[in-house]
Length: 314
Ligand SMILES: [Zn+2]
Image 1 (cartoon, rainbow, N blue to C red):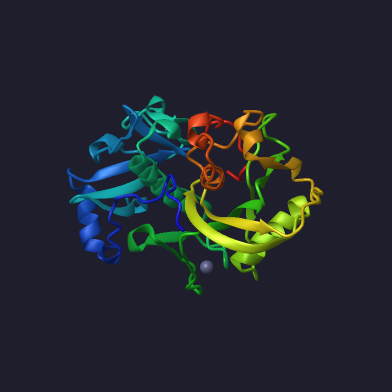
Image 2: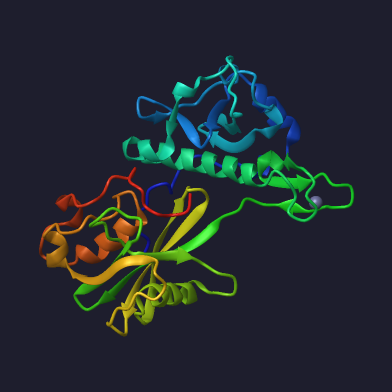
């Protein structure tokens, strides 16, 4: 089983074999045909609901070329991600050119959303690793930006792009599923159970622990359904269906304001708001929900807006 998810399946060729070719990348960086994804304060440039590729001249002079991150090629065009400084100066794109990534997601073609998520994820990893975690010296970007190398005299620590794996699970008990509402969510909004993995856990361990912590439900069999990059900032959501082996809900850890078992008829009645259609949470619910003779979940238009506060770490 593998669900199709938003942010994944981008068509850029990453060309990892070119990352060590410093001469080629230095030349590509200055080439007038090269495209740049500019990221400023976690915002991106979008024109006519499409990711905008700027050229070198359009970036202005306020940024440092050695911080450019080589993303790969779209067709034959080299693509870099660059972080522009908080003070944009007046030579490059102005503040008004940048859009809040979360706010525009619902309008973007899937391939553009995947490209911006990739660029934003890399830039934000750089932003959180400016210094070596071992000795505190400044890091230097090497290998096309995919390695941050410590510049300290007696330290050879290298950092690699960081992902935060999280499990997300729809627990099923016969003809009903388990949904919860986080404390900070709008009234009526319900979704699957999710949480970050912890060291020393398998994926299945994480699923069982999260469901138990948040609802006290015991989970038996766990079925992998698909995954989704979640660029707020660098999570990857690993999605499951799970079979409940108990059914009495008790909210153990206070993370949820409410949790309950929902039949398809209750969901179809429109009494709750579901997560955005672009989220793997929606896909997990939809895959279960659509196994009946009633209406398709996507046709019921029960999803919340993507720009609504959804509670995940940002
Ligand atoms: Zn160091």
